[in-house]
Figure 1 (cartoon, rainbow, N blue to C red):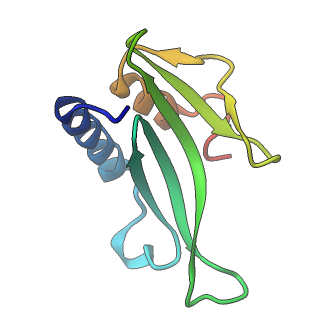
Figure 2 (spheres, one colour):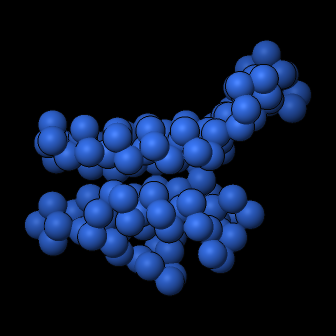
Length: 115
């Protein structure tokens, strides 16, 4: 089930605030940028970079993912490991709000999201 209109706007506001602080300067965004996508009940933050073999094409590198579980009113926090699968984020596998998720990704205490 997709997010409600209210939840969607709340996500967009929190993620736009996050990106305004974390995105690279405008003059290098062709080389590396940070964006997000909202799909159904999940939010994915990802880097956008040129492909190394064909710089005219862009590739997306996932950074973090949160999925809203409506029944429990929580966000499940995930990071992508080397196996390219999403794994629960060990210190904080669940948070109460999208703002909490953004704060965890921004802090990146275990260097799981940005290395």
